Amino acid sequence: MPIGAEVAPGGGVHFRVWAPRRRTVEIKLQSGAAHDTQQCVQLKREENGYFSGLVSQAQAGDRYRFLLDGDGPFPDPASRFQPEGPHGPSEIIDPSAFEWSDRGWPGPTRHSPVLYELHVGTFTTEGTWTAAIEQLPALAELGITMIEVMPLAEFSGRFGWGYDGVDLFAPSHLYGTPDDVRRFVDRAHSLGLGVILDVVYNHFGPDGNYVTQFSDTYFSARHHTDWGNAINFDGEGAAGTREFLLANAAYWIREFHMDGLRVDATQNIYDESDPHILAELTRVARDAALPRDIFIVAENESQDVRLLRPLDEGGYGMDAAWNDDWHHSAMVALSGRDEAYYTDYAGAASEFVAAAKYGFLYQGQFYRWQKATRGVPGLDLAPSQFVHFLENHDQVANSFHGDRLQRVASVRRVRAMTALLLLGPQTPMLFQGQEFGASTPFLYFADHGDALMRLVWDGRARFLSQFRSIAAQLPDTTPPDPGEPATFVRSKLDHTERMKHAEIYALHRDLISLRRNDPVLSQPRPGSVDGAALSVDAFVLRFFGEQGDDRLLVMNFGRPLHLFIMPEPLLAPPWRGRWQLLWSSDDVRYGGLGQPPLDAAMSDWTLHGDSAVLLRPAPPSERPE
Image (tube, rainbow, N blue to C red; front, top):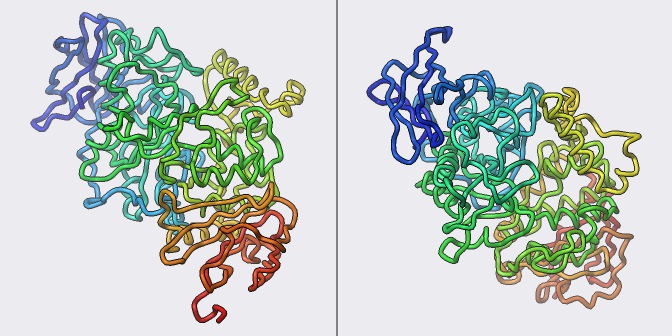
């Protein structure tokens, strides 16, 4: 790396740090078994604000901090490990000491990818990488292809979501060592699972952040975010900041064999220079992975499709973006509530048809909730470039009690909506425990000092108050306290529910298997899906295969629908054929009441309310003369 502590091949450790506001920089080294042998070594000043030097006495396992003009000591901004947390010394790590077994791993499959978001601290009772490794075979058996890990960077406190990271190169000591992360990725690869990492490049956390001791140009004077000062990518002194973040993106790919990145809140990554930092980040990450393939996905509230355009067309070259539009429509259909940021969605059949064909629903139209236009035209984008989800960390926690789907909707409606998620043409993502209907909530939790926690608590209450139904309960009833350890513990998964809730688990397993193995559903491509509303609450999606081998997904989120007359050409069977039931959300295996036979003559179809059926052409031997 261009910065940090590097174990030298011939012995000793080479240190390099960017500290343009300082005149002198010294290494305060702690060595020995108890780290009680100390010495100071002055680094040599380079051009452009860097200081560097080889310390021959240093070795992997030693700890160190920097003295800046005699001030400090401070941990390394590019520390690879903070064993005592963000306020303690940095530890020298030799990444080459780990023995990988994934030689020849080509990268995550692009064939019908299915993502799975998890938070290491709550994924298991133990909340460690070692415990998480034990659950990987179950994810592979389910049919997951890529795990999306919430941020790992070191942060303050005993627990947190990870979006307040301050040491961006140091995996949090709360979950284990850097080599534990490598063991997790290595084991995942052995099972055919990719691992992508959620990274935060729009702000630093508020506690334990020492970068301003090294440079006063890390933060922008012109741009701001809801979580703190925006990072400076285009102002005075931005060159060092850009190198820092680009090195970080390459670091996770190169040293931890990550299969890509999920870039948080890209709408708050401000850069008016050329090339844009996101385009450069994408290029650097892909170069670091060669010859492997990687997957880069963005969160972007403003739905700017430049993120998804190729670099040579002026875009940023990312693979996919989270689609909040689809989630919001789905939640209105599931819960019947359209308040706060759900205001501009009806949960209607026409919205699901449009999303299946075009991804984002808002591509430049006026958006009442924000009193402005939302989105950018992207009608030509491929379905796989949109990540659809019913649950993620934000959306589950953005309820009063961290409610899971089964607490906001009937089980029948959840089954049907899950079919739309997992059989639709876009890239689906599950949130930890969703596959077995986890009864545990996922709450907002963060552990800071008392003064900062008061601000966090007040900010959380203000955010939730945008929902009228929640605001009506405040302040008489308050949501779980983010700073209470019990809030964190309540969010931990109970993996025994995989067996206790076997019906919902079987639903997810069977749907993912259909998605990956069906010759038509597994190959979505631009223009291969069309749809039509059959009523306000019912619709059909037709997946076009080769030589008439189509698939028909019929959804009904309303009352039972009796189709005596069907003047909709997408419902027409293949030439000289008829439709045959392939799958139903009402199957008794999933806890349903059973699916009535479909009339072979198509003179009377009955669709139960809150149900989904998947149809295929009957084999030639079963077709009428």
